Length: 186
Picture (cartoon, helix red, strand yellow):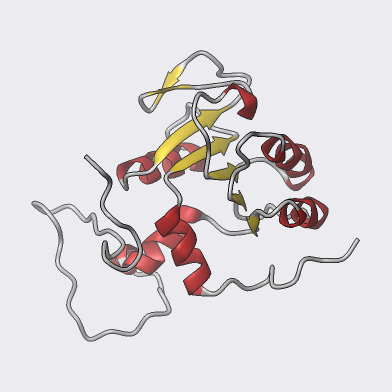
């Protein structure tokens, strides 16, 4: 099977457009442990205004981060824009197929850091979905918004503009509203 083109590098414009356009995210492989990356990412994205739904058959029926956890994608009560896969590369194939069976289909299949399944990506792209592999939306959001540079991480963005902290001593920046994310309707 051919390897999808361009899955070793993603332009910032593509990542920014995805983060700007999606509203609902299904995080498959959610954890109830606050020390686990899936819990941290779910909380972070929820704090940034995304409607994050959690999927884990072992936690189904429990409330986590203000939402009821479901066993599978088909159990979600709302249409999903982006399916984020926090499972291993082999499991990503079945999860991708489950996502493609949803009506309406998600626009984006996003595989977390170290997760890559080229065959699943080919199927998803053939069905019209955008596929991102081996990336973290929390890291990408932080990098593009400038938040990540507060932590001493190279954001690959040079600027002489001094950043300011929002609020009282806590760091919470956001993607520029006018460029990447329009305000939510009230």
